Image (cartoon, rainbow, N blue to C red; front, side, top):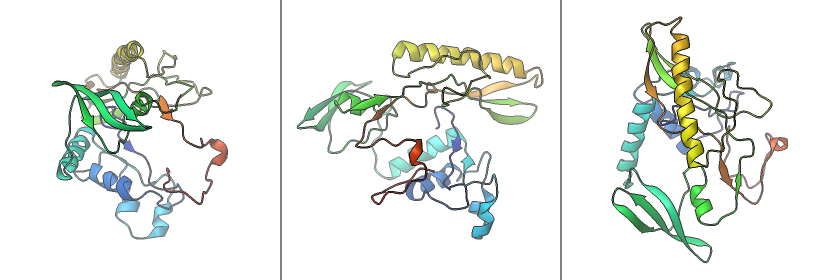
Length: 256
């Protein structure tokens, strides 16, 4: 969301005027714009107590935030909560006993070390820890299309340019970028090539836009490969589109 410049905080509502995501999701939503929203400010949700006013078309409970400000605010929140942050650290292996992770093997500037753990939350985005621990995982079969989102400044305006797409089904063609390959996001050489192609595509996009905005310059580019869906943990049940808006008696969360 910050390193990849996907700075649109997705809706906390169901599209029909009802908020469905609360808790940490809303806490971070409000934190992301505590120093000012960048765009898509949901005034009907944040500045009105009238439930009827929230059901306006195209006025969902979403917002566009500044990546750098949100990253620092999130870091500040973690430190306030007593979280020890290890920047530049990668999990490279796990130690598992009786089906439970006992240690994470990490590498960073200090070298390789083992960290004893009680519980592990895999926030890699790629189920890396799950895979390293021998859990059952599945790879996203359709792969990822090329994306090259960036921020640019020109003609006195600061804009997010959403060049390309992050995740679409095979039936949708990516017409903005010439490279139509799919990338798994799970191979180092492939990720490196993707990043290089993304940079070239970004440059070409800027040169094209300069025909209308002569002074356009990039001010922020993504610092991580713009990959959306790679590998996931295989649970007891895998949802599909037939379960859209389905209700389950043991539900503990919802994604809007």
